[in-house]
Length: 313
Image (cartoon, rainbow, N blue to C red; front, side, top):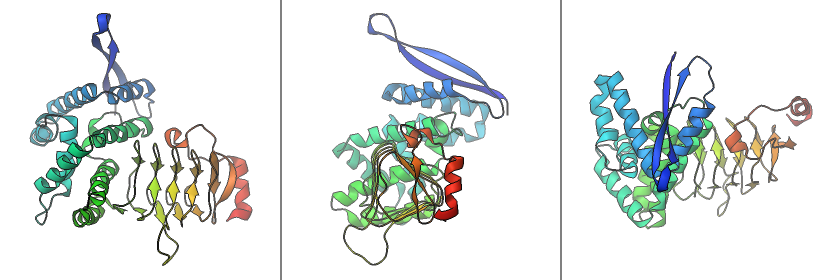
C-alpha cells in the first residue's frame, strides 16, 4: 500500500513555549520509517503529546472509515485521559456477563489511584511497541488492537490485585485474559516497564517468575518450572533481554541482563549477561551482539553460531 504517515514532534519554542512540527513520509511496500517512528517515540514520552496525537489519529481514522466512528469515538475521543482510555479499552475486551466491563474498569481506577505509576507503565509499554515493532506505524494500532499490549496491561491490574489481597479477582482476570489474549501469566509475577509481547499467543509465565524492564518476549515463550518443586521455582529475566519465539526457560534460573535467547531454545541453566544462547539444551554461542537486544530485536545468529548446532542440538 502506498500512503502517507503523519507524525507530530513537539519541540521547545521561544520563552519555554512548545510547538508541534509535522513529519510526513510516503509509505511504500517494505519502506523503513525510522524518522517517523523516532518521532512517535518522542511523542510517547509526554502524556499530553501522546494523548493529543492518539486522538488526532482516531479522528483521521474516522474520516477514512466512518463505519467505525462509534467504536473509535467511544474508545479514544470520549475518555478524558490516556490512562482512562487504556482502562476502558481493556475492560471492554475482558468484560463478560459474569464480571462486566464496569467492574473491571472500577478495579483499574482503584489501582491507578493507589499506584499512579501504572499509567507510566502503560506509556512505556506502548513506546516499546512503537520502538521495536516494524508493523506499528501509528499509536492507534497497538492501543486498539494489539493483544500483546492488552495482555500485559491486563496483567498489571491482576498483579496489583494479587498484592492487595484481592486474589480471587486477580485469578479471574488471569483466566479471562488467557481466554481472550491467549496468554497465561500468573498474577503474582512482577513485570518491569517497557515490556513488549510480540503477538503474545502461547506465552506462559509461572507464579515465581520475574521480568525486568525493557524486555521483549516473542510468541510461544514459556517461563516455567521443572516439575512439582514448590517455592521459588521459575525464571528471573533481567533488563534488556530478548527471548525468541518458542523458547522454553525452565526452573529457578536467571537470564542475565541484555542477553539473547534464540528461538526454540530450551534453557535449563543460568545465562550470563550480554551473551546469546541457543540449542537444546541451550548453551552460550557468543556475545549478545548489541547493547540491548530487547530494543534491537535482532534474532539472526551468526554463521559461527549455526555451525555450533552440530553439537548443541
